Structures are given as C-alpha cells and as structure tokens.
Length: 51
Image (cartoon, rainbow, N blue to C red; front, side, top):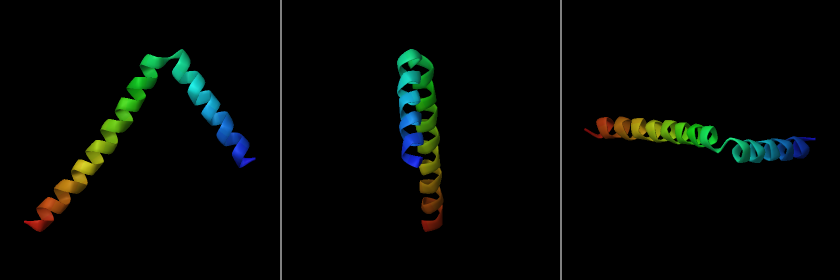
C-alpha cells in the first residue's frame, strides 16, 4: 500500500510540473530558499558560538 501511494504521489507531481511549470518552479525556488536560509542560520549560530 505504501509503495502504491508513493507511485501515485510521484505521478501526480510529474503531472503538475508538466501542466504548470511556472508555479512548480516558484514552489521549488521557495523550498530551496527556505533550506538555504536554514543553513545560513545554522552557520551564523556556530560562527557566533566560536567567537
């Protein structure tokens, strides 16, 4: 069951990207920006900790 749900989600994701590439790219960019900001925050924490 878990495997089937995974395949369905993957197929829907590919369909969404194929039919709406602009909004899909915006979502991917937002996720990437959020991840980058989190790592910047972690880096700042350790930099301040070392000083």
